Length: 360
Image 1: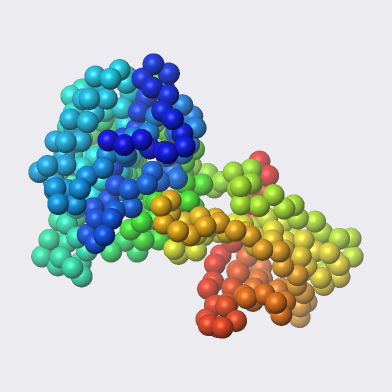
Image 2: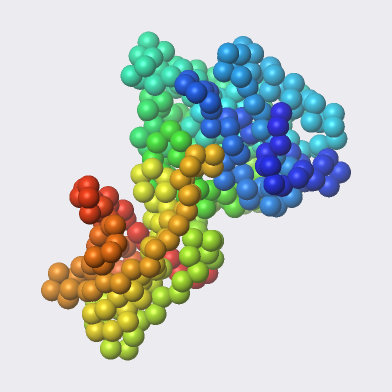
């Protein structure tokens, strides 16, 4: 086991609310992405210690890693941690569901669990990512369970969300399945900063709700439901502190574009687009983008842009000669914007749907 963060010392068993053991995915080539994912930052900031369960590729098998993880839980309990949570991505999520420490852990959070390869590389065993997952759900003993499944996941045979919900409902355990959340695509979607902005606080609250006595009239004996709203503007402050304005003489169409708009590219990079209407058809914008996956070099940044609004087409265009990219946007609905960004050299635009972010 290794520290979850190089720059955040552990509080220790006496002061922490508990400890989260994060298990990374299986490394098929090179080194695994074993950095603590952004989604666990909210738990760390809320008083939990985070440790990483590191495994060498040569020994990372179901037969060795599952009992080793259970042993790690026992060690941390022996160190004095009263609450233990398992979190994992891909193979790490699978072994988190499969481990059976005694006493059971307080919660499990699993992101895109898989242990039998992709369809293109393991056609004979790929469907086991579904068939072998259901017995794990039948026997999981954690106090509460969260499973996240993503669209476009090459390891997912499909149909797992509905089947898992059926199992958990029949067993009447405190569990939730988030199946294909919007704008989060691919096997590594749970590692992205965009996923963390959306779900980090909710995961923390759901885990900590396990401390609340069960048996309330609204939730029977299963505890509170997992509910997660879209992130408020305050949650996105780290992307850009720019504030939108709309001049009194702005074209009505340009004024409608003024505001803070948020969305996520298919690769997990999140974007905040802050538009101001400065004059009749003159716009100013800040295009800010976040990190993607911790441990993978894709830094955040932002750029200021000047543009013009075409009332005839409803399109705003930001195409300053010195800028590397051309940005165009238009409203699809009152609070929905389509943004396209194209590199001048390569040409092919990337499209993204943004939604207006209101202060809450």
